[in-house]
Image (cartoon, helix red, strand yellow):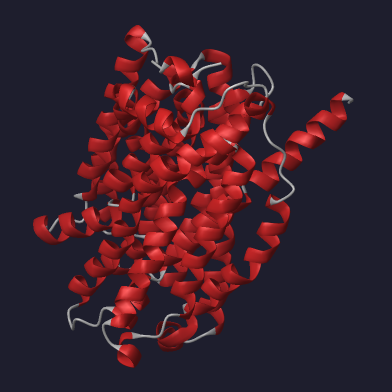
Length: 431
């Protein structure tokens, strides 16, 4: 195979493997952007803040299924293979997406409506528990030597494409439909579009090839051996979770929560909030591979330490400046700065976590660490931000949540690279 053919093969593998990531983030962003409409459709409490918090709680409860999915489906990927596992996760995710898209409102079927939406989110969370980790490990294992950071970063970059397209669709709806129409039923249109692309994603993902790294192993761990290894390496999983916290909190703040923050808190127009999110998705896509490539050149630690420290020191000043006479321009500037922090950090973080987890249970340990961070920190961000503003009365208070996540990332980086922790494995689980 020529160099050109090898590059083309890797590009095709990137596109096929990240297609499920696209669907996951497409739906996650829509849930955040249309949170106000969803709260009125399924949680009509009579109090806007309460209804919004119930919606974000449902969003977060789905994330609590991610660690369960990471353990169960992660063990499946490490035992059966990356390709088959990613097809299974896509099927589960598709079911959850369809349930939310077609679910009748509370006024039509009563309490069954929020229950159905919750079930849809639980299915999505269970699938997402290993979708992101599985794709990350797949890209890590097909990367050429010296470029693992650059290649692996495209797992997160694919999510930005989903947000970009979702924001464009939302922008088009805002320009063509009245706000009352969008609130009544128009918010479902993007969800139906997501349902329509599911068959296409299935087709392209079925053409995935298994990674050479997985095929080269003479022994694959059983489910019980995977679980034993995860328990034996609990310190690595815990540190990995803290490492990921910086990524997930920043990501959900600048994408999923930004539309609600812009409209409900800063009182900007829906179009302005959407445009900011669109710009953030575009810059995220640029910064992510740059962060991965830089970490390939200078190492993971300098990138991770620098970006987490910057976020820790500047999050509160940035949000304090923003909320004083908030404008579209100020929101755009602050979000683009946070986008830079997120993109560069995450570009190095994903490959760093791939390198530190034990290779024989790479998919399950990576997915568990990432899922715990997403459940306990990332997807909790919209709810935490809404609660902080309501309790403190300060519109800049979400900065404390960002700072806490940055502190977790900084601490984990210093501990991991201080003595370069080593993984342990049951003897039967290795080649």
